[in-house]
Image 1 (cartoon, rainbow, N blue to C red):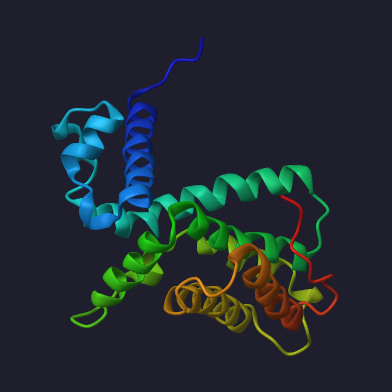
Image 2: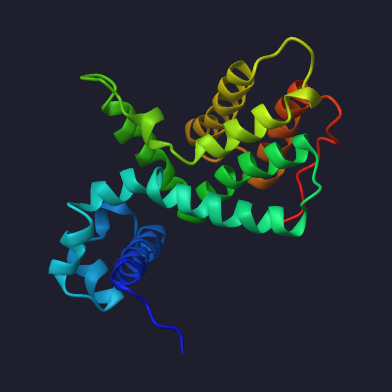
Length: 209
């Protein structure tokens, strides 16, 4: 039987709080859900919640840093295990598509709230948004490692900034348009166009899940 250390137990508890909160917010809406309700649904003491989060707002902020990072990294590692010989374009496209999949997972309201709360920190500044997106370093490494497959003249830094901006722009447009398109259809196709413009030899199709 597998045993868990303190760090693993803490991570599992935090994930339980997060997934419970996401489910309740999807069902009832952000304003209608309380910390007490999240704890009751998760079967945890209220004090346990505050060990991991200071407030409901922290769950929203965390969802686009730690939780998005874990979501992307775990699934991207699984993708590489299944498709170790994937082209540069397919690798990058799969990585970026995982950000869209996370938005679908947490839902429209949480995605919009994450943008609003995190953009709000930019006004007083300085924003720590880019520094907190530590999982994006994987994307940069993939681009830099396969730059020989990119179109001539583009740098790893420019390609990274362009593709990161593309995925964030798609997510923001999805929010502003009140889910005006299906993320896994139109959103994935928009990303494929962006990736093809950097890696022309890419098939441009979202890689298998």
